[in-house]
Structure formats: structure tokens, C-alpha cells
Image (cartoon, rainbow, N blue to C red; front, side, top):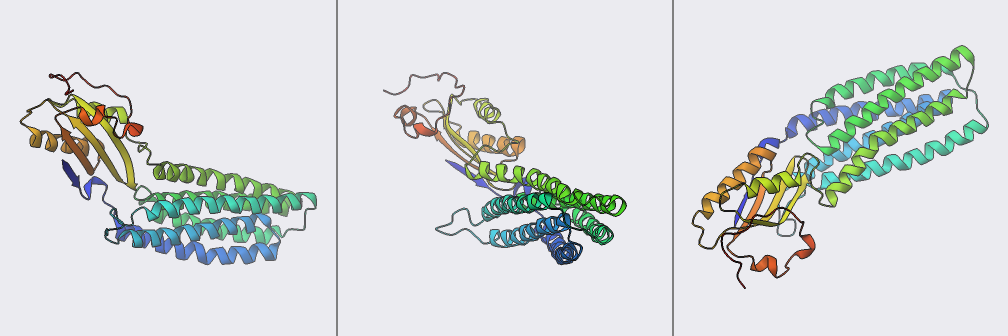
Length: 319
């Protein structure tokens, strides 16, 4: 059996990621308070809803920092993969928290559509403009690291949606200031809700897929199976599993059957492991070499078996 893992080509620049996250957290959380006070003083739901979105962003950034820190803890006898998956749980929590925020904003928007209150358009525009500048700075900080980690990617999308929300609040303030039509404020807040749902859906979907041990989106299951079968001497592959441990860390396990007496098992293992790393960036591989179909034919792990293309062996299976 071969087992190989390491940092691989997807090693994370944790120092740069943490620095960008921390600076973004300071910016977002500081202005969140300013925007909340501004929304209350100007009576603008668009600003208040955007401040609520920034609150969840600040929480997402804080959880991302915590997840990176906890993920650095070494494996133990009870946590053999370590704590790297904490980032997945944190990302899922952040996504669901955004959905809860949407429910609150929609309820308040409905009430304001029934009885639109007075809104200070000039103050609303001032706060929204400052918010847009803060968001653009945070976007610049996070952009370089968005592929490092699913939490950072989520934070980047949230901040991007926030910047669009600030643009919406600016537009609403201008309309209120020039026309006096205050109905636009709750309508803009509903638009911000759509942005929140858009930015959070992908994160929730991806985290659930990872927690269900789904095949990573950038890896084709059949291509991995074909790559293993393409090696000389391999006649059968079964119980092939591909999943994500944490962002950028994929794993593969498989049973590989070779003819009885096959004399190059070590070389075959090294070649398969190397090709999986080279072709798919999979840096955690466990391959079990067998000279018999007995385990497969006994139905062991049959619930996990996926039908694929196996070539005929050069010898009859053992009875």
C-alpha cells in the first residue's frame, strides 16, 4: 500500500492571507459601526441593511482568521486530519448567517413599503460613498488570496457584494435628494438582499458538497479512473474515492488490482502517485495494490462502488 501526502502545489501563503484578512476585518468592522449609525441618523434602510451585511462580513473575516489559526494545529490520535476542516464549517456558518440576515431585511423592507418614512438623502449619500471606498480597499487586499481558501473566497464575494450595495445606496440617496421619492430606499435594500443571496449561495453549495465528500469540481472522476487504468499491469480499479480535505488539499484512495505475480508493484505505486499529483494536483494519495479480485467480489465496500471501465485481467479471478 502506498500513502503520500505533502504541501503540494496548492500550499497556502498563510502569512499573506492572515495579514490581508486582518486588515480587511479592521476596515470592515470599523466602517460597519459608522454605517449603522449613519443609517439610523438618516433613517435609511438601505444603509442599515448594508451595515448588517458588513456585520456578517466582519464575522466571516473573523471566522476565517480563526479557522486558519485552528487549522494550523497538528493532527492527533482523535483528529487524524488535524483541524483543517474547521474552515469548511466556518464558511457554512457564514453562508447561513447571511440568509438569516436576508430574512430580517426583507421583513423591514416590507413594513417600509407599507408606510415609507422620511429619509435624509444627502447624509445617506455621504455614508454610502465612504463605504464604497472602504469596500474597494478590502477588495484590493483580498483579491490576491481569494483562491487560497474557501473562507477568503467567501469574504471576497461578500465584500464585492457590499461594494455594489454601497453603489445602490448612493443611487437611492441621489433619487431621494432630487425627487423626494423615499420608496426607493426599501426597494434598494431588497436589491441588496439579492446580492447577499447571490454571494452566499455558492459558498453554502460548495461547503455542503465538501462535507458530503463530493468529488472536487475541478477534478473529473472518470479521468482519474482512466489515468490509473492506463498504467501497464493494472486490470481493475474499485472503491475509488476523491474528496477535498480542505481548500486546495484533495485526497484519493483506491484499490488497484494487478495480475498474480506482478513484479513491479513499487514502481507502479510511485508512477500512479506521481501522475495523480502532476495531472490533478492531488497531494494525499492512498493506493492498495492487490493480486486478486477476492475483496471486490466478496462485496466489501459495495455501497461505495461506482461503476467504471475495467479491463479484463490476464488471469482468471480466484474462486
